[in-house]
Length: 225
Image 1 (cartoon, rainbow, N blue to C red):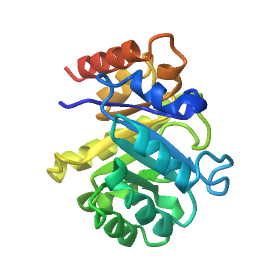
Image 2: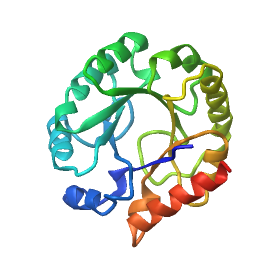
Image 3: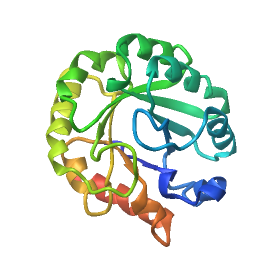
Image 4: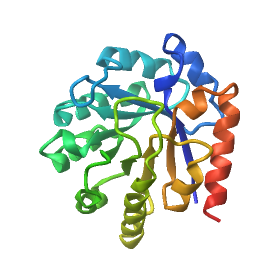
């Protein structure tokens, strides 16, 4: 099993993001960047131009998580940052009426495309989209802020998705979890079928982010043996 650890810089030092990313280079697979518009979620992070600058300065590929309204408009726009270093764009199922069409527009830019669901959204909405997707994201906290507690009840959704992905033979479809992922929770998430883990506070609130990334990977792998 391939395990991917993707630190979220939401809780990193925002004044020195390039150097914060460098702290986990060689240990993390890529960087998870949360884009919030203060509409879809009650928080604002980065504008499009700020995002472009962060991506250009990053030594690691960028996985964009769009927590914004009008995903059909913004998804393809952010996907156009592929030349700068974006390799994956995830939109929210709840943020557009045309999820399938938006997936096509994003993938047309040559990046991987994921769809995320909030904790209150039934996991069944993703079942019919799996063959179009490169990744599904189960939020294990309410989106909008870092540092929240892991919602273990979301593991039922992870198990269902893992089962469906296996049944469809979609070995290239990643199953990502985001929210409260730490040394104390990653084993449960991995055992339930997740293979791609977003960790924010656990990494950047530690004294040695690289060491934490390595330990997270070790525990996720061991949980699947």
